Length: 281
Image 1: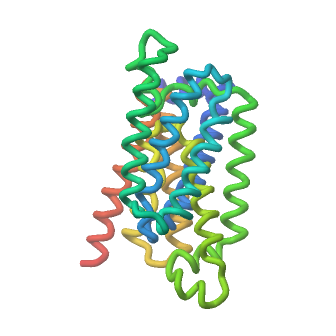
Image 2: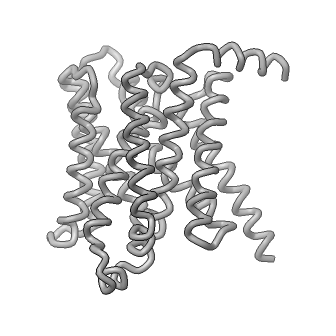
Image 3: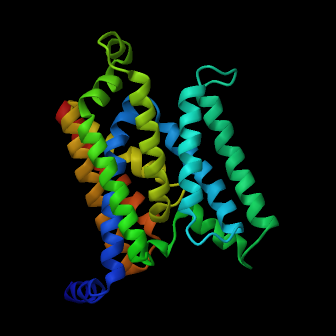
């Protein structure tokens, strides 16, 4: 135990570890806040679809040798989120079918582009890193950290500022419209925010695992808490704790960052399911 503590103290002396912990906990916090709304509105699959779109955009950015791929990935993902929300109900291809189509086609096109215009000798390794996360979270520059902190703070402020409207739209959209709430506008806000979170979270857990970061904490909190505010707070605590512990375990034992964080979320979910069953009995 003393050896683990001494190793942890040694690693904490490096700025890149501090940067990773700051960025990871902020991304986890933002993900959990919107995750509750997505679960309750049955929009969980949107996060998965957008993450695959972000993968396709990231592949194109890699081929173009962009120094900062976020400049391409962020606008593309936000644009697709807006199209899915605003146009999904007015087209011949409805909601879940449109998301599924975009999801698989983005993965296929992204992998095809990375193979045809390969910028690296190890294409399969590059793809695995993008899909399942990599050590890039441990190589963040100060500028990238500052960008992530700014975007995360914007997400948190927007959520807190429009909390009551988001709450109304989440539980009864028709009633919210009847009371004068512009539900479409707040659905659009939710879609844009979740797109930003997806892009930020890809460096942490990868495009295939980011939806777990959004959904698991919310589902865990719902096992034992029955009011919206309580679920949001509990979800945030679970998400931040699992991300922090997962990153520490990854640093200490050299395990994949994304998979370790999701494994921690899964363990917490199973524990909360057990607690919920015991309470009901």
